[in-house]
Length: 144
Image (cartoon, rainbow, N blue to C red; front, side, top):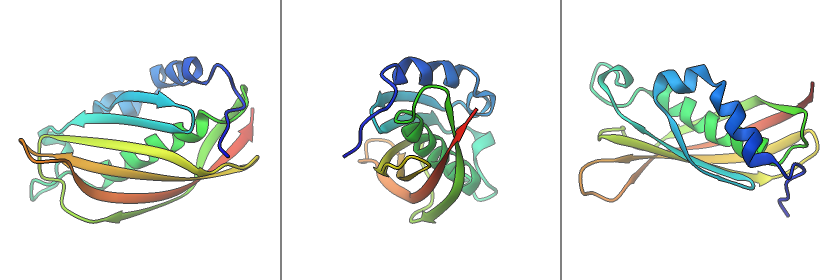
């Protein structure tokens, strides 16, 4: 069973998001914060695309990392930090569209390691969102 060890997790996550300069640089916006689950979106711009016009794979991996990491942050005790210990991304389709959405959740909670998953979708016009990447991540909990 997934259960937060920080009753103020939403407030703490919002404060940490305010300090996420790389996330701001990309234009990624968190749209949902729940216990063990985070979601967000990014409007695709030219700067996010690789030479063929697809969303860059590094961008997709970064979004998966962000949502999986913050999902783990929502569960750890106040005063502890989360860092990525491992990230594996499987790319299923090219990211061709106007917007990316990402959702991350904790699959297995632990005291020192949280095993997470993430999915990244592309939205193109009126088409339903298309799953373009699936990720698994191990998030390590550190004392600060």
